[in-house]
Amino acid sequence: MNISVKTQQLPAYIALTRLNRPIGIYLLMWPMLWAFWFAASGMPHWPTLLIFMLGTVLTRSAGCAINDFADRKVDGLVERTRNRPLATGALKSRDALIATAVLMGLAFLLVLMTNRLTITLSFLAVVLAVIYPFCKRYTHYPQVVLGAAFACAIPMAFAAQTNNVPAIAWWLFAAATLWTMAYDTLYAMADRRDDLAIGIKSTAIAWGKFDLLVVAILQVTVLGILAFIGAHQQRGAVFAAGLIVAAGFAVYQLWICRRRDPARCLQAFLNNNWLGMSISIALFVDYLVNP
Image (cartoon, rainbow, N blue to C red; front, side, top):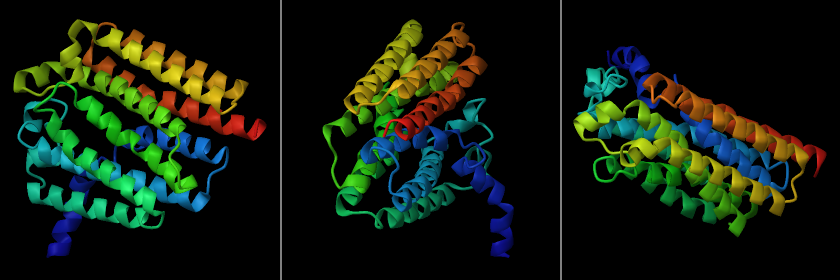
């Protein structure tokens, strides 16, 4: 009977962990891959890379589960989130907490296959991932916490690959944090009206009419930091071309959001997958042609 119930609830668990919407996995994965390629100066250690890719799926899924637990009383009031499983009653709060614990536990087992420095850094990542959903009640800058949580994969990747976290890793950490702030502000712009009504805070609300200007500044800063890192690591024309393509995607995002239409803001958020992918592909190819 219990097995039957759990089977019937499988679609609800998939929705809880957003496995049916993998955009968050991609956005978490791209900077992690940048870190591995820079840390290894090319092809990273494949078993370690596989550990991190699996860990990306698990930690993002756990983050979605704890996010829905934190938002369980307000998701039903927001058009975009009213069908989430905790809001509809398909799952209970306890189910979300258990899912979070199981997924984080599995991710930690993967981290145990690396080294002590990586394990130590993983605790910071867990703390940031857990507190992020609750920050929306107390600060207009939860995107900063989310950005740092996502970017924790970068020093962890350097630690796992080289057992060291050099200064360049922290520059990349800064770029990833600012990128997350930019695209999550676009995401928050889609919910701004509902968030204002129910008291949820975000950078989209804090920056008001200057939202796209600040997002543009963040995007320029991210690309500038990546250009600096590329020069420091002696990357060539292919990587530079990837940054130019990424800049094109950034301009496109700002353009389609110019009227602050919620559907367009969500489209711009999703477009960041292509921005991250263009940088990743350029970096991989650049190391192939310019070891």
